[in-house]
Length: 421
Ligand SMILES: *Cc1c(COP(=O)(O)O)cnc(C)c1O
Image (cartoon, rainbow, N blue to C red; front, side, top):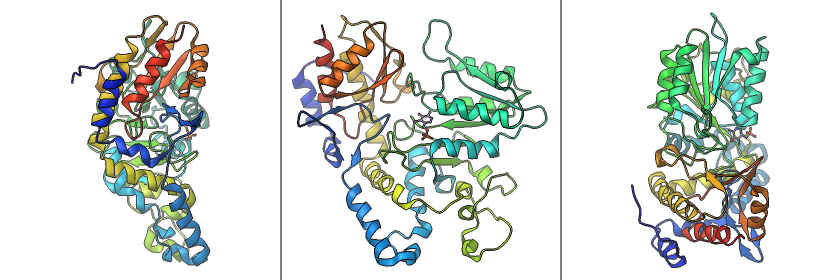
C-alpha cells in the first residue's frame, strides 16, 4: 500500500473529513489541556473511557440494588453467565472460536495460570524461550515459574535479542534458537507485539517452529489485541493472554483475557488449577465433590465474574463491533503511515524510529529513540497538550489509535515537534 501524503493542516483536515470512523471519537471522554481535548497518543498504555460506561455502570448498580442475590439470574445481564457476554466479540478480535476465549482475571495472573498448564517440565524439557527485554511483568513471571520447579533462570530461560546494532528481533534467530534447543524446550512465549519497539512477531511461523520442536507456543497479546489482525485458532497457537485496558479501552485494571486452543481446552486431562466457575456449569451450584472442567478456555476460570470490572469492557467491545475490525485496521495503516511520513520531515532533532517500516510488522505504535534531549522534548510535548509515553532511558512511544485519533492529531504532533528549537 502506498499513500501520497502532504504535510499541511488542510490535508490532515481533509483526511478526517472523509474518514468513516471520524465520529467514533465522540464516543470517548478526552482529558483536557487548557480547556481543550488533549492529543491523546497513549491508547497503547491506557485507552480512553467510552462515554457509555457511566450509564452502563449505573444499570449494574441498579440491578444489584433491585435484586440483591437474585441478580445472578434476574439482572438484565445475569451475573451467573456474565462472562458469556464477551465470548463472541473477543473471539472475533483474536481470531478464535467463542469457546476458546474467556474474559477473566488480569494479564499476569492469566499468564501464570496458563503456564501452570503449559509449562510442566518433564522428560528433560524445562526451558522457556522468550524475547529479550520483554515487559518486566513477563520477565518476572518466567523467572518465578522456572524457580518454582527448581531451575536456574540463567539456564532455563533463553532470551532472543536483536542483533548487534539492531533494535528489532530477527524471526530467523527465534526459529534457529527453537531448533537449537529442541530437546530441552518446553514453551516458547513471546509478545504478539513488542511493547517497546512495536515490532509484530510472525506468530504463525513461531508457533509452527515451536510445534516442530515438540514445544508449546503462547503469546502475550497486551499490545496486539485490538491493534493488529489475529488468527489464533488458524495459527494453532496453544495459549495466549491479554489485558483490556490498552487498545481495548476497558479501564485501569480492567478484566484480562485468555485463549486456549480447542484441542487443549476440550481435553479434561490437561492440568489446570480449578475453582467453581470453571466447573461444568450445569452442576455449578450443586456443591459436589470432584472438579469436572467445562469445555474450553472458560474452565480456567476460578471465581465468579467481577461484574463491575467488566462493564467498561462490554462498552468498549460494542464500539469495536460497530466500527469493524477490518475498517479499523485500514484506518490504522493509513494513520500510522501518515505520522511516520510527517516524522521523516523532522530532521533537526536526533531521533530514530525503531519500529519496523513494514506495515505488516507493526500496529499503530511508533517508538522514537532519541540520541539526546529525549526527556526534555517529551516534557515540551506534554506542556503543549500532547499525551505520549516516556520509556526509560530514551524512547517516546506514540500510538495513534484508529478509534479516536485523527490525522489532525498527527499533524499537530508533527508541528509541535518541528517547532522545537
Ligand atoms: C501492559 C502489559 C502487562 C501488564 O500486566 P498486568 O498484569 O495487566 O498488570 C504485562 N505484559 C505486557 C507485555 C504488557 O504490555
